[in-house]
Structures are given as structure tokens and as C-alpha cells.
Image (cartoon, rainbow, N blue to C red; front, top):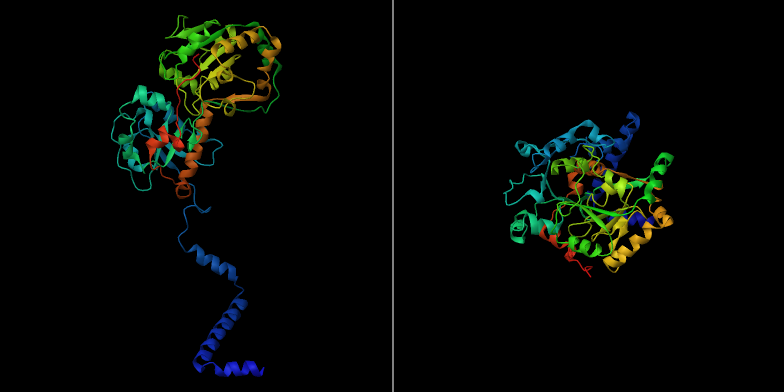
Length: 411
């Protein structure tokens, strides 16, 4: 005590008075709060709520954002406008308004530019807080060599550097991957009626190919020519002699509507009736590039798809649901394997098993999920904000790796 008394005596009188004053104020506050029954924690919480809240706070009210598809084709507009229906947003915790009206650009929270359709057009000035989304549906090879060979260049696309925030494309590293169909585990037991249909599987033989583009960067037409030396292939469309079924879509618009589930066509029924195999050959050998030819269309039918592309098909298709040309050293070896399946019922049954456990869904369902995710991010843009510094590099050489390859199996 004598030690403490000596220390206290050495402290200046002025400081002693200040400390005494502070202690007196604290004691007075405790006395007041105690008798008024005020929760100190609540007092500080109220003070915090008076400050501006970050945009990603859970207390933020959900807003209805506007998404503009800036360069839709005339026949796409009805499809896009239908996405504003309430039914489209079922099971999504957020709702957005989707439009193709460019007059609403200034009101749009997000703007989608389809690079496949941009051509050399000049894009509008980007508004503050507006999100720009670049969408790419065609393969990079097809985009550069057959559609906009003069537009998709580093010098042209540099105008969009540091402006694009999110991407939609067939690639899995996109912000919103667009996949032409998907599959999931069956929730209901496999129906016996469907099983009866699949039993006719082994009564068929032969191979079919539906195709409209005859000269492609993947050289798929060359591969088929080599395959036909050892296997009969019926080619339907512009590149073959077989007559296209009368119930096939007569225009690209109808084909797109069928693909996305907006119209029902029985064009592929001929596969169920006559063929065991269907050639799902892509027009380009690009990373993750898988179209409806290898997903939704064929999974809806009693057929074994033979896939040729650069994607890892095990990431997209159910196990034992397809044959990959990459597993064979040459078209001749592939033909030999297909012939063995034609005469082996046990082998055929292996390609039916997946339908007991999995079910495929329309590409529209994947698009619905993407739009829901976009809508969710627009309600929290700061949290999800990013900027693409070099959009050309992202398209052509992602991660400093080639996005597409040349064929190496034509022997």
C-alpha cells in the first residue's frame, strides 16, 4: 500500500482530476442504465444500424433487376421475352425482368452481348454500376473462321477489355456455363413400360448421321469417310443422300425451339425405328464444346451416341451412355467395335443401364438455372463483381492454353 501511495503522490494533480472525472461519468452511466433497464448491447446495435449498410448485407431487400439481351435475332426475341413469365422463375428465390428492347438500355442492371452476333457493331457506352455479360455459344474456331473472322481479333476486342464482368459460354470455366442438356439421378423407379421399349434396342443395326455443315475445322466429314470404308453410315441432310424425315425442322428457328423445348418435333424418331448408333460429331475440337447433338437430343432416344470432340465427355454424359472416338486408334478400330456391339446383346445392354438410374433434362432447365444465378448476383453485385482484362485472350487462349485443337485421328 505504501508503494501504491507513493506512485499516486508522484502523479500530477491535473491527471488525477481527469481520471476521477472519467470514473465518475462511467459510474453515472451505469446507474442510469440500470434503473432504466436499457440493454447496452441493443444500444450499440441501434447505433450500428444508423450507419450505411454494405450492399451484401443479408438485410438487403430483394430487388427486381432488369436484364437486357442487347443483340437478339428477331426469332429469338419471343423466346427471351417468355423468360419474364412467373413460371420461368419458379423455385428461384429471385426474380428479374428480361427484355430485348434496346430502348431500356439505360434502365438495365445487366446487359448480355452475344459475341456470335456482334459483328463489327459499336457497343453503347457502359453505364456506372451496370454489369456487362459476354455470351458465346458457337465454338471459338467456328466463331473466328466462319462467322466473324474479321471481327474476333485482338485489336477489335480490346475495346471491351476491363468492361466485361461475367461470361456465359459452353466452357466450364465461364461464370455461367451453358450446357445443351444435363442429367440427374432418377427420383422415381424406372418404369417397366420404358424397359419394353429399350428391349427393341438389340433388334436394330446401322449407323446414322444428321449433318448440315459439310466443311468443318474438326474435319469430321473426313473421319466419316474413313469410317465408311468399314461401316455403313446413313447420312441425312446437306452432306448426304438420305432423305431428311418430313417432320424435321425446316428452319434454324424451329430447330432452336425444338432444342430448347419450346416446340415438340419427332424428327429423331427415325433413330428409334432403324438405327443402333448415332454419330454425334462436333464441328470444332474445342475445350468443353459439347452441343445438343451429344447431349439432350440423343439422350432422349433409344440410341447409342458415338462422340467425337475435344471435351471430356465423362463430365457431361452418364457412364456407359456413349462411345468416344478418342478411345480408338483409328476409324477402322472404331468400326470393328461397333460391329461387335451389333451382334452382342450383352454389350448392347451395357449401354441401357444408365437409363435406369439417370434422366436427362432440356437445355432450357440449364438456362433457367443460369438466369436465376445471374439474378441472384445482381442482388449482390459488389460481392460477385469481377472484370475481364483481356476478353480476346479469355476466348482464344484461356489460361495461356489453346482453346481449340486440330484433328489428329485421321489415319
